[in-house]
Length: 441
Image 1 (cartoon, rainbow, N blue to C red):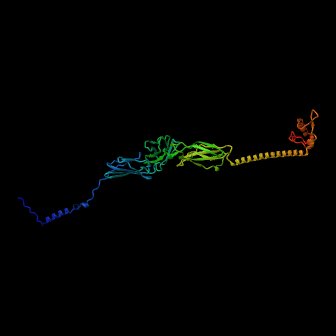
Image 2 (tube, helix red, strand yellow):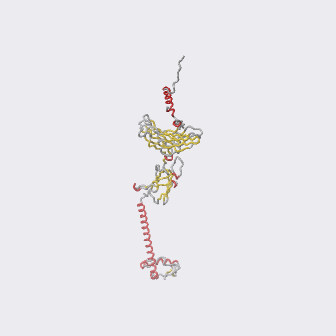
Image 3 (cartoon, rainbow, N blue to C red):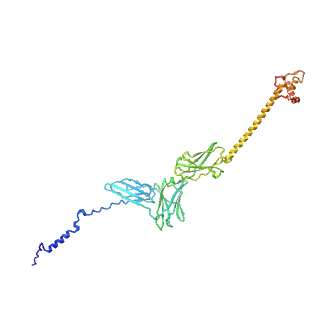
């Protein structure tokens, strides 16, 4: 039979050892932790909206959320004002107007639902080496239907860099690449367009580049066709002059868009011909509100003048080329006042001489008339002895004396008056002295 095993007494060493081991396990730190000392559970990560930005159409999109109550999206450029959009709650995208992106922009989306809010930010940068992008970019429209754009190679761009220009209209319906590049040492540094039918009022210009040596940053800009259009010179210049001034008229230049008179300003260059260079007239500023006309003070006789006109936008003083010169005035008058004064003095002198000659003739005539009247008066007072002794005459055909009323009496008196003796005595009266019907006493 197996031996009997007696239990250990309570106070034996084995019981005490077993008790100590049991207490050490129960006092382990893991068993001493209370709910107050436990770490809070780590929350699940916030679901991402997966925001995406497409610069080709300036569209910002994200993942849609159920039970959306409001949506706000924003674009914050590094230079410029913050643009905020509030799309419809069922839309998961928003569009922004074209802006320049090459300096970088911050994009934000906040979606509020009935359970929680979602917010996400995206930084859009310009990848590539600093200083590799094209710079000094500019464009201008001329002759209404042509445009030139130019730029310079980036200072840090590698030697094999090549640039490309893309133009997109503001309605984002058409994007096209430059059809005719201008090159310098094999690198595109400009573009010429001779068909601007696809351009709208605002257009987005993008110049990007490629290279095998380094990444090339892009350059972009938004330009208004009205701001970059260079007007042609005014046309159909006409000049109508009167005695005091000349009225100058012209037609406004042809533009891409129909513009009113008030949207133009003009400068007139009116100069006299054949004058020293230091005596030129200043330019004349004319507002378009005057409806393309100017009254130029110029009295007759006027010298030969030449007028040229140029135009610009009323708010942007970017002047056009000068128009073709138009002449007015007389070729004989050289514009010098000295010649005018000499002409006036000469005319005055001639008038004075003529008047003096007429006065002298008039005085001489009056003097001669007075002398004749004096002689006639003296003859009457002396009773003209040479005529008295011939008072009566006989008729040529008879012995009857001629009377004063007879025709023969008059003829005889004329004959006697014109005798040499009467001339010596100084008693020859005028023919009007003997009046018919009166006798000589």
